[in-house]
Amino acid sequence: MPKFEIVDPWNLGDRYTFSPAVKRDNMLFISGMIARDPATGRIVGKRDIVTQADFIFQRMGEILRAAGGSYDDVVKTMDYVTTLEGYRGTAEVRRKYFKNGFPAATGVVVKSLVNPDALIEIDAIALVEK
Figure (spheres, rainbow, N blue to C red):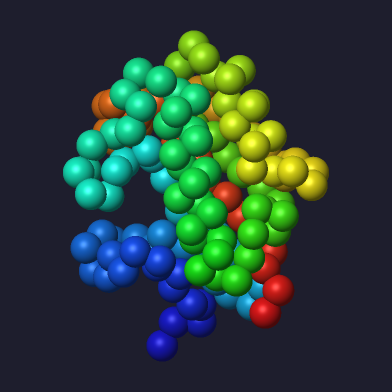
């Protein structure tokens, strides 16, 4: 029996070897997400890092709500980007979702992500009340 709760708003089940998020006590760990459209499997906003970031934060909101939280509960994000072209535009995306203060954040430039069309992957940690 795991010591954590799996948070899976899309009922992915055993389709992947990871969970969208796991919650233990009030800590919520959100897996890295790319802008993959679940209906088509394709990347949303191909060659547009801002559109990809926005899509990721929308999906992150679904996880937060499923765990009983909101964007206000996010304390840390980590961006993995394959390019800095357009990356400054992701700051406006963050302002759209984090309206009551920004979480701590780290950004790392990487050579590539698992999906070659993904320009950004974001993971997060949130503290959600029980």
